[in-house]
Image 1 (cartoon, rainbow, N blue to C red):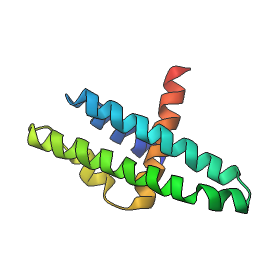
Image 2: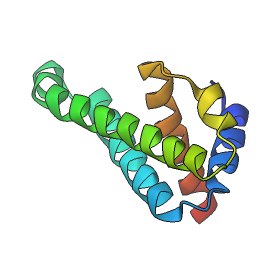
Image 3: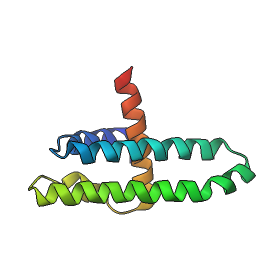
Image 4: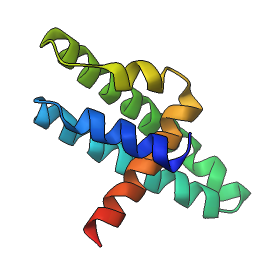
Length: 108
């Protein structure tokens, strides 16, 4: 995934009428991205201590993507973004980091 693709996916999913679920997703993406960045900066012992937290945050992130997509589909909304994102854990985690970046740039 590159920045262009991430931006396109984010723009598509942001059009949803499911704004409360989108807010939950964004919150979990930002949380996961922060944990992942802190994990990268940690020493090996710190990484071991953070591993369970990082995994739980990643699982919650994936759950929020699935919940949003399921509700969008139920309401007849386009979920092409979700189909293109796929189910690869690494790719989903990377997308969360891009979401964090996109939000930071929009705030500037």
